[in-house]
Structure formats: C-alpha cells, structure tokens
Length: 569
Ligand code: ATP
Ligand code: MG
Image 1 (cartoon, rainbow, N blue to C red):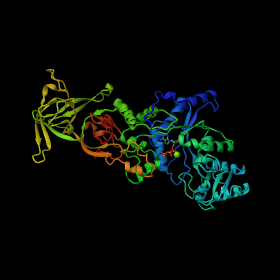
Image 2: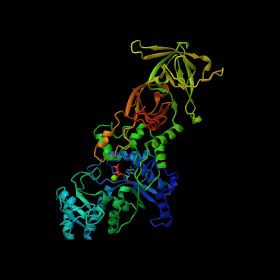
Image 3: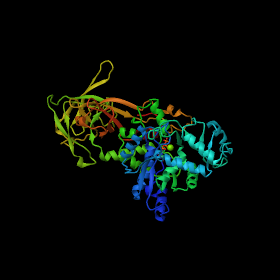
Image 4: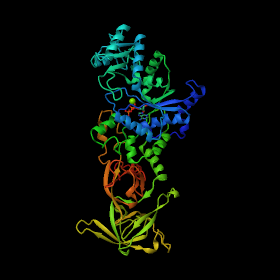
C-alpha cells in the first residue's frame, strides 16, 4: 500500500478539470449539479466526508448546486434514525442542500414505469429462477453465464407477472424482474442483472405501499437522471457498474449524467465499512455509533473534531484515481492545527500530586492572570485562583531526576504557569509502599507572574490547579481503536475485531480549574501541555464534568514508531 499521497494543490485534481471543461463546452448544461447519495443504512463516517466535501465543494466553487439524496431502496437495512443522523452530520460539516433534499423512494412510481417500459421494449423479463439458481446461471469471471429458461417470455406475460409481483400475489424470492442484456458479457454486472425483487417489508417512508423494491443499481443512475445531475461522482467500485447504468439510461432514453469515479478514502488504524462499524455497535464493542473512538462523523464530533479540521483534511488529501492509504496522523494534525488557533487554554491535572507551599499563608488566596490563547490576543485573560495547596501532574516530579529533567525534583526550582517559582524541599512518602504522597515546597514571592527580579532562570514551567478551587472531573483518554495499521487487511469476515486495541480508552478522575464550571457540552479546550479536550455531549452535566481527549498536543505515536517499538506511552 502506498503512503500518504498528497496533492499539493487541490485545485489541480482531475475531477475539477473535467468539470471546468464541461462547463466551458456546456455539454451537460450551464450549471453544475452534483449530489451526495448516501444509503440510510448506517451513520456517516470520515470517508463519506471526502465525498460530501467533494460534491458540495465543487457545486459551491462553480456556482452550481449539490443535492442530498437518500438512496433508500432497501427497507431491510434502512431506518429513519440513520436519515436523521445523516442530515445532522452533513449540516454540521457546514454544507447546505437548500431545497434540494431528495429520496430515491420518492421516485418509486417513476422507476416502476421505467421498468414497464423496458418490459414493453423487450428489454426486461420476469424470471422464476431461485436465488441460488440465478447465482449458478450467472457464470464466473472466466466462464460465461447461461440464459434463464424464462428469458423469452412474451411482453404480455412479463407485464402481467410484473403486475402480480407488485400486487403482492407472489411470494418473496419466487420471482424477480431482470434486465435482458447478455449472459456472456465479460462484465458480470451486465449478465441480466436483477432490477426488482419482492420484499414484503414496510419502508420507512413509503410504508406498505410497495412490496417490490428496485435494486440499488436500477435506482441509482435513474435517480441521478431524474434530478438532472450533470456529474455523478462516485467511488471506484462503481466503475464496473457504469456500463450497466449507461445501458439503463440509453435504453430508457433519459438524461444521461457523466459518471466520474475517484478513490475512496482509506485511513490507517481505521475500519471504514458501515457493515463493520455496525458490527462494532451491535456487539457492544463500542458504546454506540457516536462513541468517540469511532471514525463516524458523530463519533469524531463527540471526540472534539471540528468541521473545519475535517474539511481541511479532505482538501489536503486531494482526489485521486488510484486507491491509496492515508495516515490517520494527518487527520489528527489537521485537528491540532485548527484547535491551536481557536481553543481556549485552561489548566487541568490528570494524575494529581499534592503540593503544599509551606511559606504561603494558610488563609490567603489570590487570582492570577491566565492567558486564554497565546495565538489569539483578542481572547483576553482570565483569573486563575492560587492558594497554599496545589495539585501538579505526577509526571512532573521525579525523585531521582536526570540532569536534563527540567521539572520538579528534590532541591530543584521550577516555574508554575502564570504563578511563582517554587522549590521542592521535602518529599512525603507512604512509609510502607514508598509512594510519594505529597511535596513540600517553598515559593518565592518576588517571582509572581513567572519572572524573577534577580534574573534567575528556571528552565521548566509546569501546570497546576489550586486544590481548594479545582473541580473534580472525569477525563477519557482515547487511543486508537485498532492496534493494527491495516485492521481490514485480512479478508476474513470478522477478523478485524481481533485487531481491536484493548486499551483504546483510559478513564481518569482529574482536577480542572474552576473557570470550566460552566463549560458547555461540545466546547473544546486546550488543557495546557496535555492536549485538546471536549466536554462530552452525552455524559457531562452539572453533577459531573466529563471531558474527551480529542488529541494529545503532539503525535506520541510518531516517536514510538520511529524507535521501532509497538507499545504506547
Ligand atoms: P460503506 O462502504 O462504508 O458501507 P457505502 O459506499 O455503502 O459505504 P453509501 O451510503 O452508499 O455508503 O455512500 C454514499 C456516498 O459516499 C457514495 O457516493 C460513496 O461512494 C461515498 N463513500 C463511501 N465511502 C467512502 C469513502 N471511504 N471515501 C470516499 N467516499 C466514500
Ligand atoms: Mg454504497
């Protein structure tokens, strides 16, 4: 598999060139019309975002329109819940379909009429072969198929039988309507594909009106045609279906959009198929479609991803004709870049160690000035309470520290962010276990604000919270959901589950500064030195603040991978 392939200038991608040419020659009309056509059988994932940004992006760029159309032809796997989530996710990503919201199910009458026309023209027939026989007759890639014994039924008989199928007089699986094309075609999709099957299931939009439903391949191209789509942009696996779509459109004599295929997005450490994501949900291996470890848009949103970061990512990966693999670290990088500009900084301590400032008065407290965002002076400052007892990060203290450890150690001095210089004078330990329980430190009153009047330098600055003022919170530290770089590599059906990372989330009880008391669900902060954290939109509330870590500040995996190790920090 190839490595991250970046198109340096997204303006150079091949679909844009085709669109520009076509708009110039006006072969497909003067206005670009694209569409994003999800099947409502699952939640959208980051791969869909690529398609959404491409279709809506082109329409915006060239003054056209982009339709949102649900290809809802399969009542067995589709649900209204999925429709709702898809609408929400596309909107959240920042795109607007205006009045152009459509459903393939709204075209069922037209599609039925199209099917009758093909029957009348001798181009479709009702076939009584059983599903397994149809498969057998189909042949293989190396062997041609053979004609169904029902292929030469008369038009009248076909029309009557199709009418009976529609009227519910025939049981499921007993009959199908097929296109009359060529059982010897080298393209299997052209070997008399099924157009309609009997499914005695209610549909989430049409209710009990239908008991026959069009196959995806019979609905998709015609739906594009009905909507006057000029450019039907889809992923590479539809290349082999294009001749079939062409055949339907030509034989029906209706508007013929131009189909263009591009490579779908594949991400390292990620599975992207809806079927597999559904399996994770159904087996309760994640908490739901919006579990912050999921590559779904709802999961990414809950994790703390922003629409801006995802759109930037989609822009950077470009559009190619060849399948490739994008590193998930590029997605994380785009998020860091966006949040670095925008996220307010706060202090929080994930693994607290108590620090007592022995020369700080017991009954005193003060309010220090914290900078909300060094990248954005307009974000201003806030007051951060300071007092005699603090918490610092356990990692920021080492009893036996090497020379280059610029944090706290016995006898060493360090700067508290926005605060004072402190020096560790005593380490209090549990007598039995030897565990460090508390540090006793002195502070230098002359260093308020972080500078020493005598020019004394300290190398390290650490974050802290005031024990008396801090709020207790829960932090969920996420890691990759899969251990393996290519969790889907194995062809075996559910084997991707073996690649799940057993430590993909660690929950810690932590302390955060009091300014976060009113933080709204979904808002995102940089916890200084720790990463970007998002207030969980499901579990966080007045009783308990819950934060999801979207990303750490740096890519800790990069280092580890370079060292050749497999584990995590
Ligand atoms: P999956 O394979 O994950 O089940 P799908 O292709 O069946 O997805 P659809 O609802 O049919 O899902 O997809 C809607 C649109 O999104 C299609 O045009 C499809 O080509 C596109 N799409 C799906 N997955 C990706 C991906 N990984 N990268 C780019 N586009 C994608
Ligand atoms: Mg699909």
